[in-house]
Amino acid sequence: MSQLPKTSLAYALLQAARIDAAVFGGQSLADGLLDRVDPTVRPAVQDLVYGSLRAYGYGDFQLARLLARPLDTPEVHALLLVALYRLETRPDAAHTVVDQAVVAAGELAGGRFRGLVNGVLRNYLRQQLQLQAAAAADAVAAARHPDWWLRRLQAAYPADWPGIVAAGNGPPPMALRVNRRRGTRDEYLARLQAEDIAATAIGEAGLALARPVPVNRLPGFAAGLVSVQDPGAQIAAMLLDPAAGSRVLDACAAPGGKTAHLLERTDLDLLALDLKPSRCRRIADNLSRLGLQAEIATADCVRLDTWWDGRPFDAVLVDVPCTASGVVRRNPDAKWLRREADIASFAATQARILAALWRVVRPGGKLLYATCSVFPEENGGQIAAFLAAHPEARRDHEQQILPSADHDGFYYCRLEKHA
Image 1: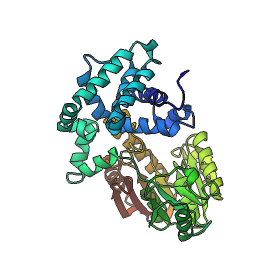
Image 2: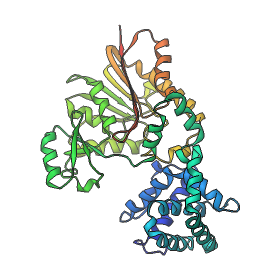
Image 3: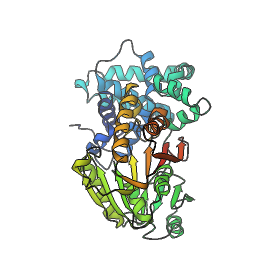
Image 4: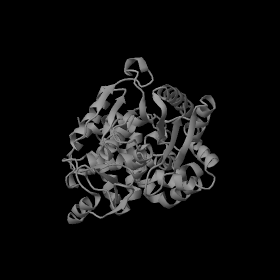
């Protein structure tokens, strides 16, 4: 247990270093690593964690040139990476950052690395321009993505890969989806303006904020007037577009954003599935806040005998597990946890899910296949293989959305089932 004041930069640096070290050890931010941090300082720690992970390849390149030999103490290595990120983004506070990083180092390994942390960071300040120039000249360090990831982006998107990389290295935009059962978008936009929160209309029910704000600043958020959802994710409900009264399945539904959007648009007989009880509780919590209702079941969607009653669905949303390569700025740990072989593993899982859920679609019905990936093996390649094996399937819409400053990256393919 740290004895540092929770309001100090040293405390934030220490907590961020411990979380980064856990990620480098194989844990995911989705495992609730940030939940261990005191809520009053969690935003500051999260900024350090996300920023340092986005910049990991860049920071690690420079750190390798500042150390005589690799460190065998993961939390100290992570502390240096977090401190380097802070020094790069807050050069006006360099001496404070170094001082507080040394204080944080006193909480690790019995304080044995205080001198090393002090020396490395001061050397960085002396060599900063040279180190930055060397990193900028190194393709992997400059791109802040693993080399295999870059190769695949360059092969798939020869003209667009620099924009994809740039989007992945920046902070994500914040967008809202207005609950049309609780009010109109224009009404909610007026409420935002009254709170001095700038926003512009996007899509059919969306608002793009000029800058992110905490959800507790959003008027009526707790009352279900609005949800946070990326513009690219909001396209799913519009593409599936089930008719009122339709029997609809949302497989792999947690945390429930797309489920809720479908129900906000029209009345449906909707079943939402997810694999884990904790994730199903998140779906239930989100629907409750929004005043919506659906049947929710904990089940492996591939094992039809455990959940399907034999009645076909008019429309099915299949938001499959994927590499999350299109939303990497929201999941910066993914760049360093993923391995190239994971693409084939995800593709195999996606193929099983798609084949299983195609069976529950009624003749004349439709299925929307969705990922938040930009790797073709999970997207167009997956659909091409499926169509070759299913002559009764017809592709009537396909869309690859590449990440940009305005939205995340998604892939959608709507399939119709012929009798």
